[in-house]
Length: 196
Image 1 (tube, rainbow, N blue to C red):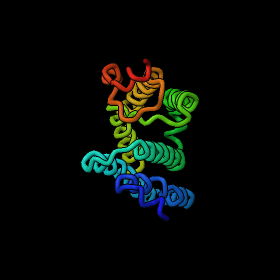
Image 2 (cartoon, rainbow, N blue to C red):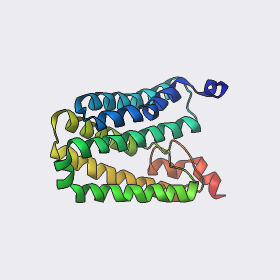
Image 3 (cartoon, helix red, strand yellow):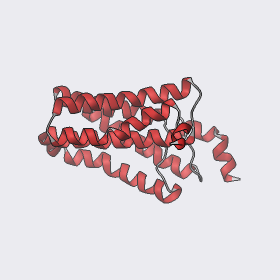
Image 4 (cartoon, helix red, strand yellow):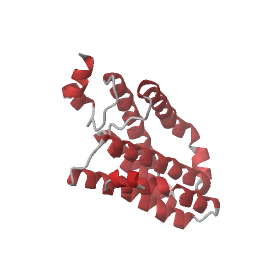
């Protein structure tokens, strides 16, 4: 129990997203679309809250960044599972385009695991924009039905963000957190120190 004392309030919001997994899976299993969508909205909201609290209270940490990234990835996967179950026709009709965005993401994850032994936690501006657009599209679709222009924007931003993540992996020899983007990486002393 004493191990839990080391976690701060921002970490607990990230934990919520991880701990909500069984509930969200049960809601999918019982085809409770509306309840699932509301709880998914809560999970996405905790993502915004934990980042804000960590910055505001100056309690950012490598552990917190990693927890946040795990929570983000799990929430995205659950959102996609929800779309597969509740909007199956839309997903099947657009499977090729979804694969175009998802396959590079899987490649990026594999490169990071091979190089660092864990997922990245760069949290770039493009990654944040992509996450907001993904959450917006998934929630909009689950509440009201799919909107194609938002779907296309999500795909394009997602692919660009994945390309940026892969580029950053090759720019940093060791795992780092919180890199705003490629432009900032060129000026980042952590990258320079690692190459010396």
